Image 1 (cartoon, rainbow, N blue to C red):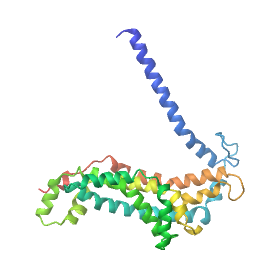
Image 2: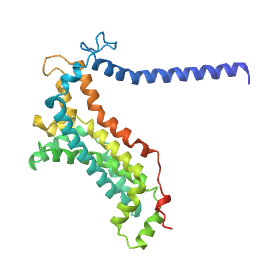
Image 3: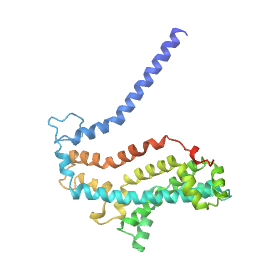
Image 4: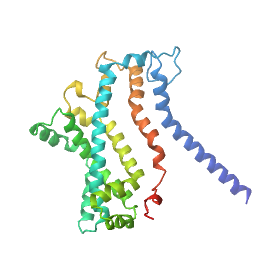
Length: 280
């Protein structure tokens, strides 16, 4: 290999590595600020090591009003909406994956189009509908709308994973007298565990960080989730942003999502365990 070409490739590789390092630093910098500011009694926008690290920011936010009640509200709201999204996505994706119809493609394209609609564009009519149906300021009504807004993408993901389950397994189950619902719940869904996991994680994370929907549909302060109550740190109490408490609350607020991913991350790469499903 010519020396000039070798030097050129080395320079290109070093430039690529440098660009990746810069990109990694851009992503890591907010996380570093979050960690350092959470233990800094005089935290600001500047990233620096605190002179006197303390846990006062955590003790200041670990109260029922600031953290515990909003976190519980978030778990109830997002957990219920996620369960509804996964169940509805599976029921909608099954006929789209298993039965051929001329309406399948138009339906999927319609579902895809609904994912392109910004949530702000439909909140005014949704708010009016919730007022008329007495769903405004209710946790179950807000969970229903969160699930509905996440359902289109959930159907697309679920169908793609469901297409990977061989039809021969369902045919064998039906030969033994299984119904369509039994086939879905006992054959298809257990075999597409990684797909269900992906839909669950994605739906939960998107709902967990949603600020606008609960902010518009929930009016009682006691029902607000953590994604809305975090707004209190932006000058509502003292007229200034409480950066230290904001960082501490943000770390606590991120914990459920991180734990959810860590606990079920092993299933994401496990693939479809089809071997034990084949009847001998």
